[in-house]
Structure formats: structure tokens, C-alpha cells
Length: 190
Image (cartoon, rainbow, N blue to C red):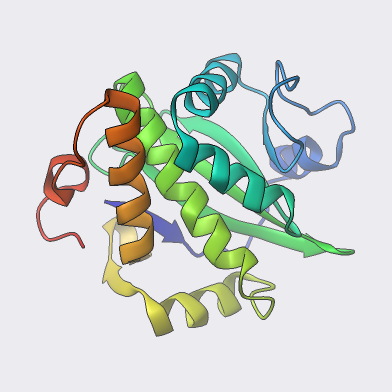
């Protein structure tokens, strides 16, 4: 299961990461600027996903045409059961910013699938201009997604479109039919 986490603060170090002009990916030559990372392993994962999956390329292309900037990072505190999450970071000027966190220690294929799943959530943000902060993100996703409560009182949202994107990308990367949702995201998922 992935989640969209509602947070109302921006850690200072992360804010500097976003605002610093040199905070681009370790290698952004094959990645447009709307999907960014400062992590060399995530940069490699992005390049592999772009090479292996037409669906992944389509998600990145749609984000590149939007006002949403996605920062991707690995989070050692994220459970491999969760695998990934999207957090609304803020908005400013004509841009909205989200962070996609990926769990450490998952396979390359699952990492790519999870990243695609989370980029679909970013597309869902991009499609809704009314999402401008954590509160409006929670309201919007509560209207079209499934709501649950995670650890430490965290509100989590899931959508069928993101689950399908993850399954489709998994199939493209592995050259086979899409897997059932519980194989990627656990029982009880769309």
C-alpha cells in the first residue's frame, strides 16, 4: 500500500533542497525537470523505469506538462510494506511541490512499480488545481480515493488509478501480464 501523507510543516533542510538551484538529480540528462532527485540510486531507478516502461514515460511526460514538481527520495524509515508515499510539500508562484518517498531495500522492479504508482498520485494532484496545501489535498483525495489510518495517526489515501498504474508498470518492466494488486501492495488494496 502506498499513502499520501498529510503534513503541515516543511523541514528546513528539505526546503533548502527544493529552493537550491543546484539541487538537481545526480544525473538529470534523461529526466525532465518536473521529476527530480538528489539520490544517485533513485536517478538510476528513474532512468531504468524510463527505458523499460512506456506507461512510466507517459506519467513523466504528463507531469512535465503540469505545474507539479516531484522530488523523489529514499526514506530509511519507510516500511517496505508501505513501499512508497506522496507528501504535499507546498506551493509557490505557479508551482506545486510534492515529495515521493520510497522504502529502502525493495527490489528494482518493485521500486519502479512503486515510483510509477506514486507518480500517478502526483498526476492526480496535477489534475486538481484546487489542491494547494495539505488540507486541500486531504479533502480532494477523500472525495475520490479510499481513506485509511496508518501508524501514528497518519491519514492515508489510495486510488484505483495509482494501483493500476503500478500493476501496469510492473508488467511492462517484467515483460508479463499485470500482477494482482495484493502481490504488489498487500491484501485489501484496489
